[in-house]
Amino acid sequence: MVKHYILMSSAYTEGTRIALDITDPEKLNTESIRRIIDRVRRDCGNDVPLSTHLIGTEDKSWESVVRYDPFFEGVKCIDSVEEFSEKIKAGRTLKGLDVATYILSKIKCTHLSLQKLVYFAYADYLCEFSKPLFHDRIYAFRHGPVVDSVYEAYKNSGSQYVEPLEEPTEDNMVQTGVGEMPARSRILFAEDGAEKLCSIDKTIQRYGKLSAGKLVDITHRGNSPWSHVDSSKPYQIISDNLIKEYHYIEC
Image (cartoon, rainbow, N blue to C red; front, side, top):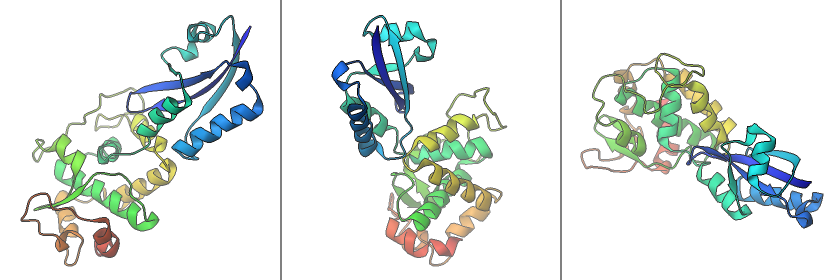
C-alpha cells in the first residue's frame, strides 16, 4: 500500500483542477507537509483555496489514485511544488473581463454601460483598499473610461445588449445567459477574492440600475478622473493616482 498526500487547487487559466501528489516517504510527515503548504501560501497568497486528501493505493501512479476515487478524474497532476504554485498564481490575478463576466451574470448591459460599471468597480475598490482590482489599463475615451480587456472583447457590440463570451451553464442562470456561479467562483479564487466580490456587488447595487447615458454623465462630471485626461488623443491612460484623488466626484 502506497500513501498519497494530495494537495489540490485550480489552474483557472487552464480551466482545470490541479493536484500535487506527494508519495515520497521522507516527505510524508507533518513537518514536511507543513513546509510545502506554507510555501504554496507564501507564493500564492494566504487565502489561496487549497484542499488536502490522504489516501492509499496499490502503487505511486496517479492513475491508481483515479481508479481509487473517480473524484480525481480529470485532475491534472503536477510534478513539482514550483509548477503547482505557478499554475495557481496565473489564475489569481483578475482581468477586467473577469469582472465584466460577473456583472453580466447579474444584469443586462450594453457595451457602454458595461464599460462604466467595470470602471466603477475598479475605482470603488481602489479607493477603499488602496490596491487594484485588476491590472488592465484604463483609457479615457470620448464616452468615458474604457477598460482594456473589456473593450477588446466587446468593441464590436454596438448599442445592443452585449452577448456574453462564456457558454451558458445550468448552474444558477439568469436572463443574461451567463452562469453566475462560475463567474462568482472566478472572482473568489483571485487574491483577496471575497473582499473583491463584496466590493463589486456594492458597485452593482449602487450603479447597476442606471442607464448608459446616466453612467456617462457621472464619469463626465467636472473634475472627475476622466476630465483630467485629454480624451481627444487615443489611448490616454487614467492613472490610479487620478482615480484615488477624484473618484469621489463620481460617487
